[in-house]
Amino acid sequence: MSLIKEKGKDKLNALDRLLATVSGETPDRIPLFPMIDSIPSRLVNMNVESYYSDAENVINGQKKLQKLLNLDYVSNFYYLPIETELFGMKTLFFQESSPNSGNPIVKSLEFFAENKIPNIYDNEDYIKTIKTTKGLAELYKGKIPILSVQSGPFSFPSLLMGTTEWFEFMLMEPENISYALEFSRSFCNTWAKGHIEAGADVIVLVDGLATATSIPRDVFIDYVIPLYKQLKNDISAPIVFYTAGGDILPFADLFDKMGVLGVFPSSNDDLTEVRQKSEGEYSLFGNINNLEFGDWSLDFMDNVISNMINENKEGGKYILSTQHMIPHNVSIQKIADMLNIALKHAYY
Image (cartoon, rainbow, N blue to C red; front, side, top):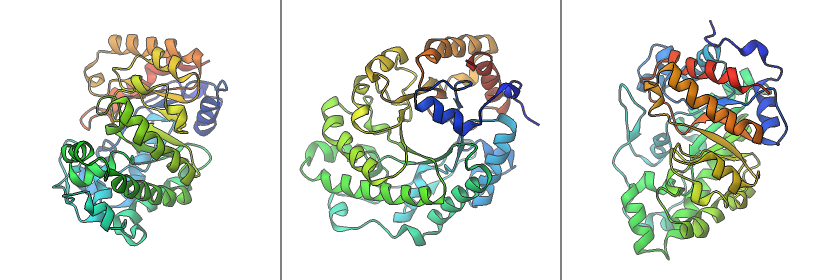
């Protein structure tokens, strides 16, 4: 049984709604994208590790989530460390949170110069994610946007060597980081193309280290923009820049140079200022605080969400979203409350 009260007012399906929004047209309402990863494991009565062990589990989790919440997207997302498993790394699983990477395996930038990306097409973990995308496409293609979520090219080396080490190499060996970035771009491109062929509509690149929270503007200009321009040429699908809660306001005038469809500002970013700097060149997904909203009262939630929608709806190219994934222990009812409140204000 759906927990959403207002969905009978919809005049467009979710895919057409998103297409109208990102193209600058007026949809029936703004799309709603609360970002969710491991929560569906609870809906199929599995722990997180068991849930992610088989594509059918994730497909069923997405089906149940969709029936309950009527989201404007479905997602093939497992967890970012699944990509490092192709390199022999271990993933750490927890009962009440998303998985995390184990010990890094890359000790120097020479690794990226001396090695090619693995043959992912024969890897059982990659095949599992492809099966998930295909299963979602069979159910929802042409009706609900299918998101394929993966690591972004600037942050990916940190998954293999550690964040501190990645930044140290950028400072100490700037002449050699091109090897790592080219390796990363090639891996991201290969991973994404398989999912596009399997039926994904949008590639979401999780690139939290490529934000103003982590790097200065000159590094963004010198490294991140060229990476995305090349990746955009490689990938024949829309790309969304997912910040994982990192701030983007200081870079908001630069994203149009990357060719991205949209950006996830952090909850710290002023959406009005971001919109002004964007000059309508890309869509904004945001920017409810995913970490705090689980503790909000209904009245407080109504105030925050209504203000956010009313300040951004008329400007167009706006998708209401959390800044990052909602924590595993937040209840489905709490997310439904958010959506029901949003729907009171979302229609045009």
